[in-house]
Image (cartoon, rainbow over all chains, first blue to last red):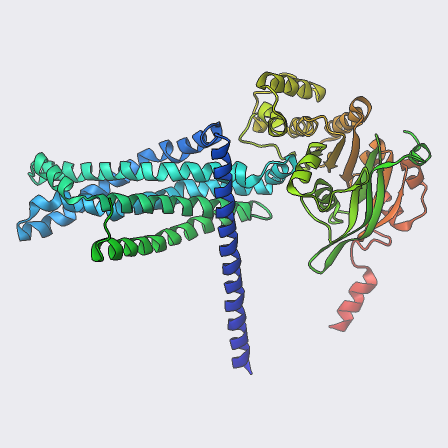
Amino acid sequence: MPDSRILTRSLGLIGRNGIALLRHTSSVWWLLMETLRWVLHRARRRRLLGDGAILRQMEEIGLRSLPIIALIALLIGVILAMQTFFQMKRLGAESLIGGMVAVALTRELAPLLTALVVAGRVGAAFTAEIGSMKVTEEVLALETIGINPVGFLVAPRFLAMTIMLPALTVFAVVLGIMGGWALGAGNFGMSTGGYFDSARDSLVLKDFVSAGVKSVVFGWIIALMACYRGLIVEGGPEEVGRGTMEAVVSSMVLIVVADFFITGLFYYSFYLFKVPIL
Amino acid sequence: MSNATAESAGREPVIRIENLEKRFGDRPVYDAVSFDVMEREITAVIGLSGEGKSTLLRILSGTMKPDAGRVLVRGKDITGLSPDGLRDWQKRFGMLFQGSALFHSMTVGENVALPILEHTELDRNVVDLMVKLKLEMVGLWGFENFRPSQLSGGMQKRVALARAIALDPELIFCDEPTAGLDPIVASVIVKLIMDLREKLRITAVVVTHDVEYAFRMADRVIMLYRGRVVVSGSPEELRNHPDPVLQQFLSGSPEGPIPMRRSGEEFLADLLKQ
């Protein structure tokens, strides 16, 4: 008898969580469609960037994230150079370090780490801000005035994120390569010209396309998950905290999952089947 | 205070609520609630906390749909409006939220300007002037560049009131306008709402559990209990009304038909059962 009770209880748990997952997925999908509709609406009215809201968000996402991204990218570049130097030296291929660092950063590390940092820093702020607006009835006040909360709160953040995350990623790639160079030239006695030549020769257009696609998709994940979690907050301040935590965790998980799929897509289509681009 | 029923006899109501029904899950909030809101009157809806008074304002403002019944505004039902119809309706009323619900990322002036900018194509200078005038009406001339967080609760409430009347609406809905304010500030808010009726000919629906202020400002009081209208009438009529639920609510007594706590007999019965 107890066995069957455990079974029904577990099935119920799986079912409930499954339904919740489906509900969240369809709601986030709806939010994406609604946000895109509002972005188009702004574009048609020639107000894509025309008001302070987006610029404020771009400043918040981009400018204010620069120091922490700079620090992390620089150190990752240094670490990559250190890790590869000894391996490469055994093969007598130290001159390829520039290429190693550049490719690893561009294809993978810069988009991923930038997105994870921004998810923690900016995504959390989005959820906390929108969540507390929900709790203090500000979102309801917007609706009552006749202002669509998705158009007013989500669309500017979404647009700003779409622009700023790729920009931050480029910044991270550049600083990472500089970090690798600083260590290579300063400590391992590599020539500056050799390092940058190797970096330039190893990078191909596909790497940049892959980095661009990744950072845009990651940006969308951060903006949507953070705004969605903020908009569904009900109750009091503790719910804002819980929503913020869930937004950061779920966007980090989704970023890595999306990274897996995008990398797979690029690997199979561009590197195996040689799909020509350009 | 005028005798509302006598004065309003033969007049058409601005809002007519007909057989409103609303349930949250299994819990019925409204069960066939009907009442009228007359032009240029302040109608106070009183009732216990959790009696769905705020839900009423959400239905009136079109942000929530009732399960059944109609809300007729000058004869037109507003419960099933199209998005365009809803926008037109939203221009015609202002809403004062319980916690003021000012946008904290904006200045006081931007808060008041937001509905004007959203619903009109007016020149920025005109909008700024309108904002100044609205703030003057609530006694906050010159406060445009303050942040809501720099103001006291009572001042925030006044800014919220200025925002609610930004578009010169014909109606204003107030959710617990005196909650959490000290008696003097609360009186100021009540006085401002009464002024709006006199000066701007605004019709107001005020939802509150504060009997004293409700009776002070209202022309007509509606008492909700267990999803139904128990009594309605002018404050004078209600004071002398024999209904026991109303009288318990007015006196604030824990003993009476409204179960506030379990009686001694119930407690004893429970103890003996164990």
